[in-house]
Length: 214
Image (cartoon, rainbow, N blue to C red; front, side):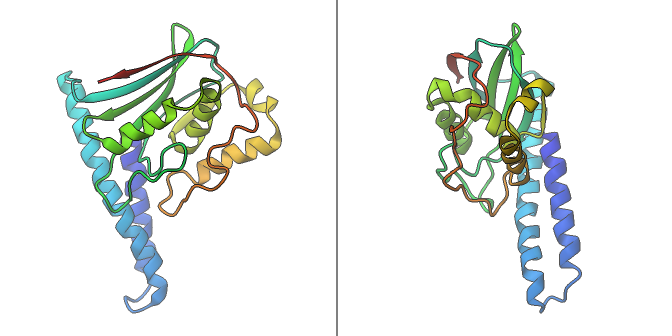
């Protein structure tokens, strides 16, 4: 969430700086002013969620945290951590708009007893975040690894991977994954026919269980 606050604040400042280059009557100013407005709302929401989360951590009170935990049987090829605003669920259904009160979700790919786990966390009452996590968990087990990799590239702030795995996938798929970083959580980004694609399995960690923490 700290990274998200930083990113949204920088985006707000950048849009404002561009808008100032135009007279208020110049039509060319409008796209930058609209971007400033959207990122300003996002920055405020991110700051509020960050403070709420920070307060819970400081007080060691986690009763307002909700989570979905997907455990696997394998050695992970990547680890990832980040928080984002899910505008769409994993099959492309709209969850929220930038102009609405924002719901955030954390995504973590880590290891538990040397095996990978995907953990989604959100604050109590964040319905869009809950729906995103549920849409992820409802996908077939055999596709969850590929979906986790795609989501990490698109939405997580920090992702690292094994070089051997990265070089084992085709150049075309590496390009598609990198493109997901560029389009991550854009206000104008709309899912297309390839939003959820399993044409080529990126890996299979053998899903063994899915649990929700309420």
